[in-house]
Length: 279
Length: 279
Image 1 (cartoon, rainbow over the protein chains, first blue to last red):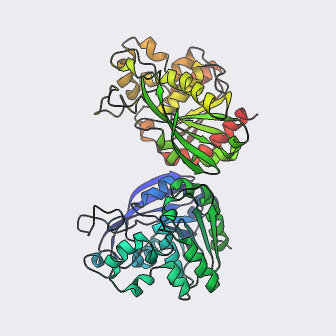
Image 2 (image 1 turned 90 degrees about the vertical axis):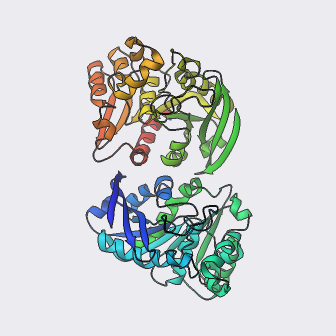
Image 3 (image 1 turned 120 degrees about the vertical axis):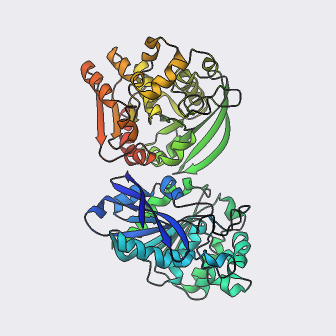
């Protein structure tokens, strides 16, 4: 991996890297915030998965994560949301398919399957890369994300028991097989057999018995995508209740789907994860 | 004034407004963050003046101000950095002149003088407008800003004794008559008589005896514009020492000119201003 930028923030460093991804078969860019505590020893890691249209840059610029990361001594890894590049398949007319919209799945259908292996990328390739090259405690990690990235955080946690000490999400797409965004791309990425879709659907995974230690979800009740039926937290909550999965879903009155919502509650998510990462 | 957007953040509301400006002879856009305390009564105000190329949106998105404003119960007003619109003079090839680069002066030279009256706008028109329409304590205000906006904050404070309870700045242009940015636009905005330039130069104002209660400046020592000689804090510091103006300039090792630097220290600026606004 090659460092292409390093910016001092809150006593630590916000670094940006590129590398040739074997999972995605293209050059990938990601950012890592190393808190000041990383100067003295290895630190735990929070993976932050971003939403549709985002790159690694949105959350590091707009969420205000770095000051909390510095306060708690937790590194933050910001992956991109899809493979990128002129050689990578895309659908420029759509913001919810192709580049910027990888949905954290391993695509099985042509032409997407060549590069769109974001699930393997964020679960295996990227953690191995950063743990080998940066002062990060191996396997001491949690995951969070927003919208499509909240979906990513939930499925990464649920599909890998024990891999993440805690999982949280803002405004996550919790049941994509029943929402327009998921239905609009899962068929193209994964084929027509809906059992393949359910392997990347947090609500279906919980119903099928998947478990993770603890989940915190914040959802604004003025979120237009909640009202459109894209997010469906009520389905996820029902599945968790049915299966005894520990999950706190907080409906936050008046908040929308934006980074202003994330910034409002991200400190509480850091406190939640710190309890598991540093306990 | 017309509200065009309202986003809940940290318990308060980040609102955006447009109005027909009599100073600037065009429609102007600005944002105000009203903290949750403003629901129960009037609150003090911090004016935040942004830098070159920015609009009212940059700081509200990237600085992380709102959470501190909510913590301290201080409203934040984010003006634009210049008049805007197809009818407003501009120099599209230059980022340091015209739209996005008003430098908080009252231009006297054609064609700029028609619309570029940003000093009157931020000192008189905008405070009167927001104090008449929003739950803000009249005349209980402080001012801060970044780069060109740090210059704006310093001159607004120094030229109006008693108007602002405290002044702070990040990476301010402290002596524009001796830096490339100031020299490149003050002649066009203000004419060739350099005594007119000195009326909008913080270092010259302090040398001429202007005073303000207290000034806090943070400056990164890895700031490329510091090394280019655009900012010249050493000149400002010498003038303050000579004249007995209270001023703390903190050189922050390793920090650059970006919003990541602002985000790192903005909480300390809120604490500084709160001491004057709420004392």
